[in-house]
Image (cartoon, rainbow, N blue to C red):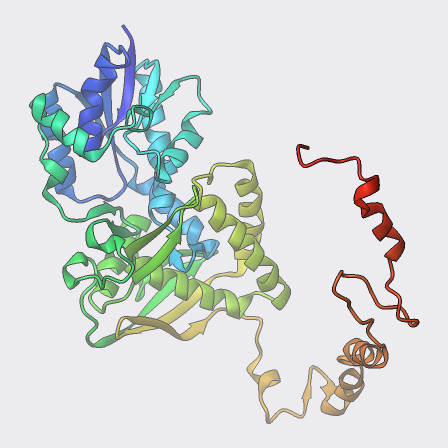
Length: 430
């Protein structure tokens, strides 16, 4: 009996995939898998109801803890993509790994998803799955299905779905972020209405939040220790009440498409801001500078769904090495929808108030006058380079790109003879 595991959310796409995997691909049994990375409870209730109506064997996997650990890896790497904290991109590999595990446990021959051929998720899922021996199937992409066709097909076959799921927007939610797209939001000139936001309130009032880190990982908020998942959920609610964590961005997808996305990410905003502030206090200039490049590469690979790639292991090794001293507290003030650092403290601070003070005559035994020699040498190469450039006469550039010689002739004139039509063996047909 041929079995296929399907990433099943209970939405239109994956619901339609259930009968199509049997009719078009010849599978005898479809095993549904729904992975919990922090979606609303009602989504799981709806998925279970739909699965029951379809006679689908549905497995629900709780992967919130694993996902939260990856989110904290993102914090240590200060990971953002085009200005916003990664959320959906981080969740997809975790979901894909969980689905693959169920597929192998259930003895499936193949694994399938309901992604279209235009988005990023097809690539993120398959980057994980194609490392297995299972066949990978993408019915929506491979059969060229449109949403209109799916709606008609569902109606003709009495499938338990509502057209468009009855929603105006396309929403993806996990504990780290909430993404909203589609509808009028596809017009970059359209101002998002207030009702697209659920995690963040209209900015009002202000408060301060102290985050405690141990080796780069958040461990407490305002002195109260929390496990990763509750900590993230607490900050989403707490900071979200002050309007923190909204992003409206024109995002460049992996396939080259530019799309408009709206995100909510209160906890991610607070934690990334606080973590960066603590790093600024404890890391050296060279560490901070080099780590910036590492962070960019980490973020790019995470956006592509490649967090399990060997190169990311190498990037993590460097990041983890820097995090040994990222222990301490950072306090942020949230007000008017903004989040800014107002205090930071660590026993590993690469900072001396005494040395930095304008009232100190010398620094570590070095008097101010000792800096005179350094000041004289600073910028020496640049001064020499500018003098050289000022004293060199630039050649005059003529129309054909050659340089005018002193006698008025053009350098490279001999080469022009090679372009004589009478001696050119090439033809337009070539």
